[in-house]
Image (cartoon, rainbow, N blue to C red; front, side):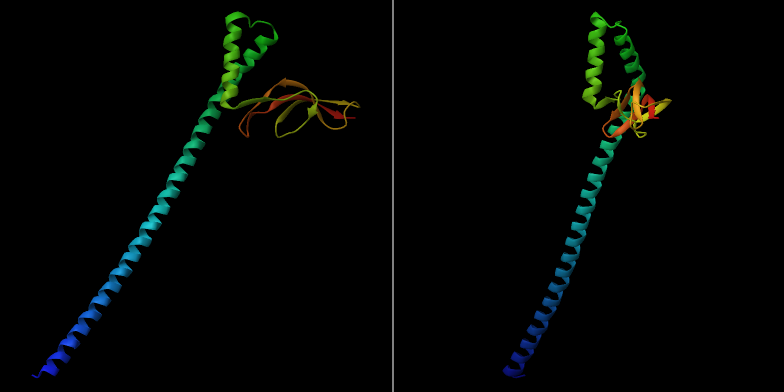
Length: 165
């Protein structure tokens, strides 16, 4: 074999080796890109999962608080009646004030004012009257206040409604 044929043979082997290396590099690059895409997808799924779990925890905490406050409403009604009759004095008044401020701090809002327009979403009509003094259905007497926690009505205000005659 001559030097020229050996050089051509070496060149061809080198060319084949380079092409094989390039092919293998392309395959490895494609695999790396696929693995990178899989990793990004998993990271996005995990991030969404974590956000969903955090949101579910917040909803569960709000629901637990709403359930507790709903069960606590009769106690607040009793304290309101005792206060209206002047039976809350001294230490009992301090405890009642603390209970009211704590429930307010938790987000419980008392609503229902005599004279406001009747809204069936937040009022429960227990009696109806007619009068020419009103121009729209009006809650003229609050028989039992309503309570909201955040945007949720825990108990509608129980009212006497006066309709226009």
